[in-house]
Image 1: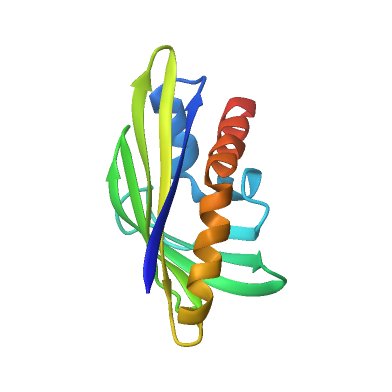
Image 2 (image 1 turned 30 degrees about the vertical axis):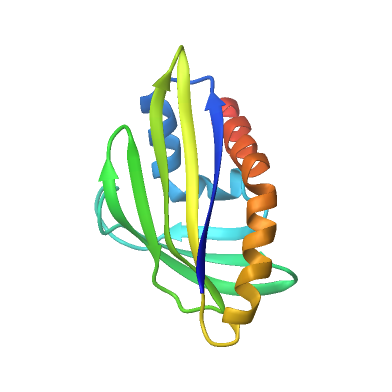
Length: 147
């Protein structure tokens, strides 16, 4: 079973600045308390094919995760997929950005997929993610505006 959640926020920064912040996955701990650490693992500039390895703590469990950027269209769209096969993975995720007055409208989404026993956990993970989605988008907003 897979399911999607999304959250949206208005960020008081130009779209190019928001894109640059979000494109650098090493900024994730600034807005996601579940990310313990993250590092870029591929060579070269940010773009399609860039990979990141992270350590994440969810529901008291620590897991290793690896992501790859699958779409990179400055300054409006970033997509990724999770390469690791944890109980619940982000099959697809991304940011959509659009100019919004003097700032930027940012929408984040993820499609969560359960693997093995994780298929039973996915509905719980989705419920929690959907409940927190707009608050998560607001945490991103605060992090971008503080940078």
